[in-house]
Length: 304
Image 1 (cartoon, rainbow, N blue to C red):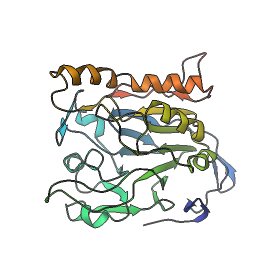
Image 2 (image 1 turned 120 degrees about the vertical axis):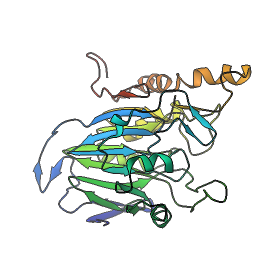
Image 3 (image 1 turned 90 degrees about the vertical axis):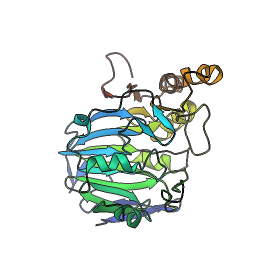
């Protein structure tokens, strides 16, 4: 069920808040709850992050298998224990490395899945029973969490051969709010003006892509410098670089030219992002996390 308490129109989209929520940060029903506690995050690789917040376990763009189409993981696939107990999945767009049907099937047909509006019927036809559809500005409640879809600057079409293609939808990001915390999950995106407005919400954590899976990036993606500019607009307390170091084309280890180009691209983007954030003088702590590892949200003593 879509919950659209009230909204304000900014730049062509509606900012929506659930009933009982104030625009002031960490205020529910007029009572300042303060910070209840950080979310617990585990970076499973690519754009997949396990988020534990307010008694719920959320998975972003699940990619849980050793391969997706022609791409191969260059790090181990997640152990099933790392995605056990998931009760909500957030899908940012329909590309095969973000809406990955084999990974969704590992979670079972009864997990609740949020997809961009226009993809629900397609996903239900593949056996998933609890699908909610959202466009930017639309939100829904999931127990103690409130999720709002927000803009993303990226294509959303489901590419593939005849038996795997799908609808053309908008790509979205998500705001996840609960327990006095606000998490921004950007999905794949380029820079867009409304990022300043998201920053006004007061973001505790932002999951931001910093590269991809190939030797170059197409439009609608952030590289380390672009992600640093996004951080300047969003002003999160903590930024977690994702969408790096997980997938590569076959042959990248044996073809000399590709190997030489891919090796640094599998390791350096999050560190280049952290350096760019420091160069901009931002207060945001960049929590560089290797694929498969828990995210340490607290900055080391004496650092931003």
